[in-house]
Structures are given as structure tokens and as C-alpha cells.
Amino acid sequence: MDSVPISFWEEIFSNDTLAWQFHEIENNFPEPWKTLAKKYASKRLHFNVSFPPGHGEWSCWMEILRGHDYKKTLDYILALGRRYVRCRSITIGEQIDPQFATEICRRKEDFTDKLLPLLIRKPPLNLAFWCQCPRETVVAYLDIFQHTFVFGSLDIPYCGQQSVDFLAAQLSNNPFLRILYLVSSIDPWPHTEVNEELVVQFLTSEKYVSEEERRVSIHSRVYEQDESALKVTLKMVKAAFDKWYQSEIRRVNVGGPVGVTMEEILSLPVPEDVERTEAVSMGSEGNASFVRFFRAEGSCLMCNFNEGLYFYVEGIHQKTQLPFNEADHYFDFEADSEWCSDGYYKEWPEPAHDDDRSDASS
Image 1 (cartoon, helix red, strand yellow):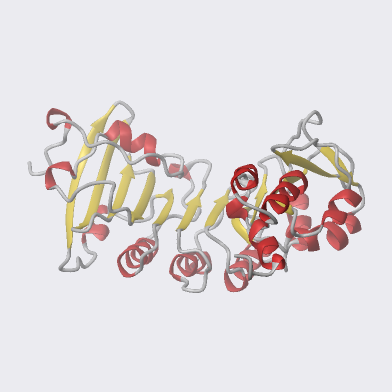
Image 2 (cartoon, rainbow, N blue to C red):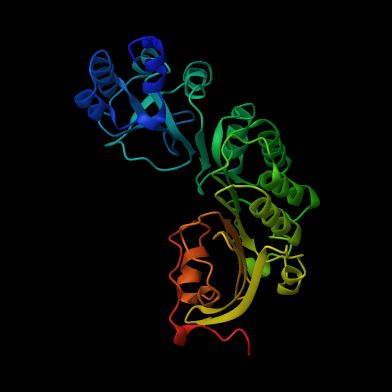
């Protein structure tokens, strides 16, 4: 370790993997790492950036995360430099609590010309538009971030062609993207061939840095009445299946209004090393149909139909979660519906007891 330049360790210490371990390093490592860890523990600054409504035409706020006085200025942040600064997310239109945040600039140029160039040097960030955002606000910020390709998670409302162009540019140029929310806070994303292909492109792309997960959530305000809204199609399911089967990605999933039938799912070719089961579960929240694809090494791809309104497919490579046991292929609907209804991954549901399982063979 003594032969390694101190500049190398400075880069390691600025990495997110050590974000909250500096005090342990300070207590257990010799010099010069002890001093270096103490320095980073006192100077590192992790925060969220927010553009809340009701604070003037342009107002940028910062919420400090852990261990620091939140009253910081733009000049203070810029003086710290990239090694100590880490922005987690940028949120548009969310109400903030002035007790835990501080306004850092009132001029658009201060953000675009000074702060943003610093933030994008430590990807990935998350970008989200809050549901109260009017159309003109969304369009204005899409324009600001149209060439910013550092987002790991995107939460994008539909505002016409500009939203489509923004998403297409992100999929083509952003290597950090893992999570995609297509929301209907203004208008639902329309069901077009272009939008379907964008989802498929995201699911199948090989160029992303992280192979931890690939997640798509399509939101529609009234699933059963929104015939023109984007839905989960067989092409999307096939893309998720191929990603799960052909790669070592830990998790791939797609959720949204139903645009695929059980018959279409059952028509998918099943590789020789994959086993498939299907059943209908009864529960207090309604009925759910599901199809499960299993591999002997423990990975699973699940397709859930919730009362014909919401469809969710998820493939997981997690060998320690469940043994390959046919008796455990059937899950309690209460756990399943809670697990998949909001598009977020929760704990893998426990297998139901024998007397609770649906009889798939009848």
C-alpha cells in the first residue's frame, strides 16, 4: 500500500462505495489513510437538488443528506470540487421543507453553467418530475436536461413529441440508465409503435454500465378506460424474457396496463432448461392469473395479471431465494398483489401453505 500514490487513494475515497465508512477507516488504517479518511468524513457533501413550485420563476434548493449543516451556499459547493460533492437526485415540482433545505441559486445560469457541470461528474443521478408540474414546466426542464446523459432513474411525464425525443436521446446516449417511469401526470403515454419500441430498446440494450437491473413502470390513471394509453405488450414481455434468459442481469421487470393475453404468454417458446407453470389465485383484492418460468439454478420469471387491469412481469437471477421445488411454485395472491401492484420490488413472497394454494391442475 505504501507504494501506491496518494492521488489513487483520494479517487478511491471519493467513490460512493466508501460513502459512510470513513470513520471506520480512520479508526483502523495507518497513516496516511487515517488522515485522508478524516478529511473526507468532514468535507464530503451528499445532497438532493429540488426545484419546488411557488418560489418564483427560478429557484434551486438543496437538501443535505446526513452529517452536515444544511445551510450551504453555491460558492461553498463549487469550492469543494467533484471529489467531495455527490448529488443523488434532481426533482422538479416537489414541495420542500425550508427547515431541511436551503435555496442555493435564483438564476438559471447559475445552475446550468456552474452547478450542473459539477453534478454530472459523479453519475448516476435520478431525475423526477412531481405530479403537480404543469406542462410548460416539464417542457422547460426537458430542454435544460436534453443533453445530460447521467441519469440512473428517469421519471418522465408525457408532453408530446418533446418527451418522446428526450427519452429516445437518453436511451441512445445514457449508459447509466436502469429505471424508467413513464407517468401520466399530464397525459398518458400513447400506445404507438415508436413508444413500444423505445421500451423494448431499453430492455434489450447491451450498452448500459450496470447490469444490476432494468425496470420499466408504465403509469395510466384509469387503466380500464384508457384504450389509447401505452400498455405492456407481448413484444415487451418477450424482450424481458430474453433479457432474463440470455444475460446475468439480476432483475428485469415491466409493469403497466394490460396489453397482452394469457394465451399470448403461453405461446412463448419455452427453452429446454426452463419449466413453466400457470394458475389463477383468489384473494380479497380480486383474482389474479399468473405464469411462472423457472430454471433449475434458481432464477425465475413471473407474469402477473391483476383482474385484467394491471400486468407485471419480472425476471430475477437470485439463486439463494428459492429452491427449484415444484410444490413451491404457487404463491399466495395476497402477497403477490401487494408485491407487484405499485411497480416496486419488495421481498420475494413466501410460498403459501398447501391448503391456500390454487389448484392449477383442475
